[in-house]
Image 1: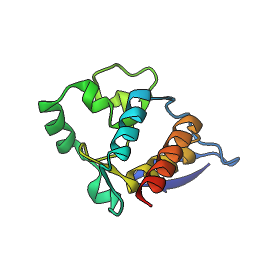
Image 2 (image 1 turned 30 degrees about the vertical axis):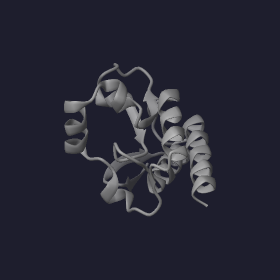
Image 3 (image 1 turned 180 degrees about the vertical axis):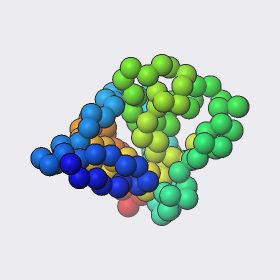
Length: 137
């Protein structure tokens, strides 16, 4: 067995290059619809550092203090299968800052979904990125 480090997370990789099991995700269709609507209404940021723009735990808590879980869910392209609704663990692949879509956020979603082979989420992020690029051209 060899060890690999990825973004402050340790995981074991077998000699065959297999990764341990990861969570499964369903596409969050209301989030996709919201992202499309935001893009079409030009509520996006084209050039941002996603590491700085991505909402942190404090940002999430502040948002949840004044918004519903439904509103929170609409900022996440993936739903963690088996996780309870109205928990942060349920929602994955955040694509914006709770105000606007970030191009860098969509790229991060697409990359991470592709890396972990969550094909449906990867394709949705790709389609949204294409829509954003066409809209902003």
